[in-house]
Length: 207
Image 1 (spheres, one colour):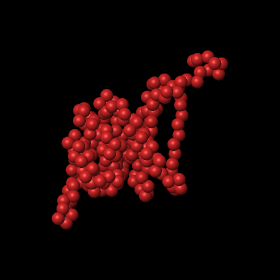
Image 2 (cartoon, helix red, strand yellow):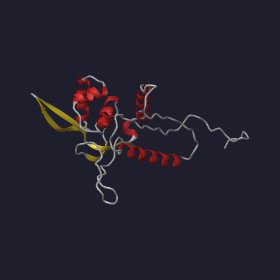
Image 3 (cartoon, one colour):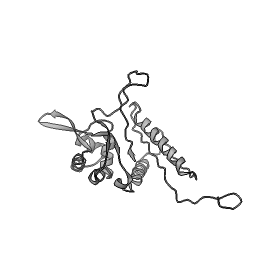
Image 4 (cartoon, one colour):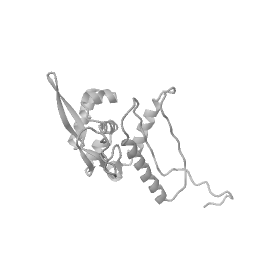
């Protein structure tokens, strides 16, 4: 399983033409594989997942993350220490603001690779719970795009794996989009074994 909050920095097209680099605005490794329980515990906590996701955009200070996520600075500071100790974030630059030095934190990798056995079985549910909570906060009279849908289809596992790969690729394309506008959109997906039983054939026979 992969953290697809961002993808490789594409600074040139296949023809070699220069294009705008993909955020974030600081140097970092392309891929980091999570192997230890400490790394998994550090990443897969709701607030820390939001911090790591936010840092895909650019480096940020504790105060900026506190304002963005509506959490106390002390809480954000604690979570940053946990992530830093696990090697998932680091201070990427410092800036003197009057008598104080502001620390800007960034991810240590653009993509984090992890396995279900290390991350735990609740990770997909955590992602969808977060998306549902954000969706519930969208005002009814919003002027932006809002879409959600669901289908239940009985397909072979190989076909489900194919769709999973295509959805992940679409998510990466979305993360690579040039930044603009005033609205931050979220794209979430879930592909999972449904408890719904097969409908069976029209003649009443099971297939």
